[in-house]
Structure formats: C-alpha cells, structure tokens
Image: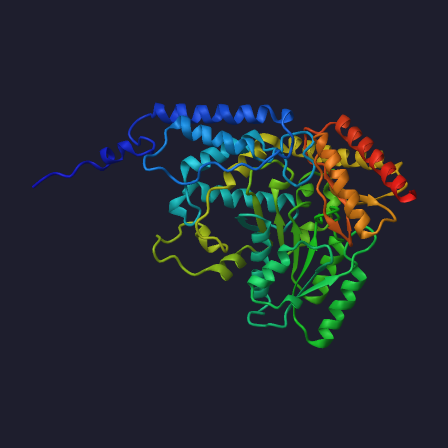
Length: 476
C-alpha cells in the first residue's frame, strides 16, 4: 500500500508560513512590506491629501502566482492612489492618521487569524475583548456590569442597538413602532430601520436648536403625543457629535425624559463619545453614561486603524438574549458566551487587538493630548474666521467646524464652496463639502495631530481671499 505524502510537504510550494520552523522568506517579505509602508507614511507631507488620480492595478490572478517583488510593486501602485490621511492638510473627514501601535496590532491580528466567533477559536482574545469593552464602559460612566461587543463600524453598532431595544421593549412585529432622533442624526439610523423591516416614516425627526442640538421641549411634546395616540416608541436616539457640525444633543435631559417615559435611550457617540474618556473633556458629553446603549468609534479621532467601533450596553446580557441562536458545530462556551452570539456578526477578526494596543500605547495622557489638540485647533480656526463678518460658522462641542458665506442662495453657496475647495486643494489643504440646511458648506475636521497653526492660518487666508472674490462678484 503506497504511503501518502506528508501534508506539510504538499504545502511547501504554497505561500503559507512554515509551521515547523522560523521562516526567513516570510520575515524578508514582511520587512520589505514594512519598509514600503514606512516610506509611504514618512513622505505623507510631500504628497497631497487627495491623490491626483485613482489607479487600478491588474486584477485577475495569473496562471502562476506572483513573487514578492511583483506583489510589492502592485501594492505600491495602489498606495500611490490612496487617500493620504497623514498629510497635515487632510482636514476633510473623520479619518486621522493611524497610531503606530494600532498598525502593528493590525499586522499581528492578520497573522494570528483568530476568529471571535467562538471562544476556542480565540481563547485569549475573547477574554481581552470582554475586558477592554468593560473598561471602556466604566470610563464612560455606564453602570457596573456594563459591557458590549466590538463591531465593524458605527452603522452596525447602531443597527444592533436598535434591534436590542426593540426586543427589550417587546416590540418585535410592531410595524407602528417609531424611533425619535434629531434632524441632524446620522443616516445609519434610517438604514437600520430599513433592515429591520420598518417603514421609512418610523424615523421621526425632532427639530434642533440654534446650536444644532435636539430640542428637548419638542421631544417631550412628541413623547406625550405618542403615548396618548398609543404609538410605541422603540427608542430615542441622541447624537454625541453630529456629522457636519459636531453638535452634542442634551444627553442628561434626554436621559431623564426617557426614564420618565420608560423609553430606551441609545446614544450614537461614534464621533464624540471618546471625549468622555478625559476628565477635562467629559463635560462635552455630560450624561452619556445614562444611555441604555452607546456607540463608540475610536477610529474617528484616536487613530485606531479601521475598523474600530464598539457597542456598549448597560445590560450586556441583552445582546446574547437577542442574538443567541446556538452554535451546534462548536464546543460549549466555558466563559461568558461565544462572541458570535453577542451580536449580528458571526466570524470576526480580532480587531480588539488594535484598540487595546493603541490605547496602551497612548496612555491616558496621550488620549487627553489628542482630545486637547483637536479642540485647540477647532478654537483657533474658529477665531481666525471670526473676523469674517460675511461667514456663517456652525460648530458644536467637538472638533468639527463648518462654514458658508451668509446671504448666498443655495446655488451661489454651491458654486462658492466648489471653487473654494479647489483653491484649498491646490494648496494641499483638503476640506469636505457637505450639504447642510439647504446650503453647501465647507467642513474642517480638526482631529489631525500633524496640522499646525501655520496650516490653519494659510487656510484662513485662502478663505478670506475667496470671500472677497465672492463679494466682488455679488457687487458686480
């Protein structure tokens, strides 16, 4: 009887790490890739934030697999066409440069290739996720015993929160259930209700005040009206950091109202919740710890590599109650339950590694320094633009600032914002151009730690020239 070839010999020609000994070829490949990445990161200020063109390398696998040199060359092509968050003028989006510790953790995460679906697939990492999330919940003021689950983005965290809220309130199958949120709430809420099978009108918008915060008086009136009409409220959603201006809803009064009416309070803190981690910034999100559920996205300001979102709950057991289906193909849990039964995702990478290692690298002082810097830059830019009487600024308690010339028609504001954005891009300063309250604005996200005062001063000068030209056109 012929003997079978050992399996490890069959795999010798395939590009897997040698399981029996140190693999020098892998080490060289990783060192070359690391050098390539470090050169890209280290030359960020010599390339514009937005690349001049979008590139597409050859896509189809060839008959014979490629060697390291060709693979790295293909990667370099993709890198040259990538958005450049490390440039000091990258001020358009909630995408800061990555922490070095988070980059390293991402590499280790890929190499370990553990799966948070079940405990035996990631024994230590499952415990690590539970512990890090419990620490986050405690730091943000949620009650003892709070916890949650990591998720692939804030949209998924918000969806899971609303699914849990519906079950906790016994509203499964109720097509008349509604969700109340501010007019500036994130679009992910509408997507979540669509996925949940609820009609578009299930999302009820509450007006905002002059500071972009949900109007609590109107919220109270609507809650009373819905109670009289017998319409069930699935949840009230407060936003801690709106997308355009970074406003934070009045969390403390909203929590009190929800408690009085027996309504679930979810806080979408994807942008602003991290301010609750620093004692001198906690007032910006005062009351956030009273939420029944809370979305936190460390990727948006702290430099944790994507994706990094966490859903926190005051009663984390509700996650298992709602999403438990049983995993008959896995051994029973020996700890707090399988990760695949604490949320919507089954297979999950160990993304908690990059959050854990990034926070450890920063320390509490580093977290505070990032938050301090973001607020300082927003204050400086706001002060630089304050002398422009024809410019309307809209901001909030966080690090976002948007602005548009006062008195322009929607069409004129669109032309101004488009032309001014191009002027800024020509000076390697990138702002975004959101449509807000019927007018296009320019928006600066001041979370980039590489942005210096000189960049903000240059930005203000370009805006000043643009406004002068706009005024001249109007007078002409």
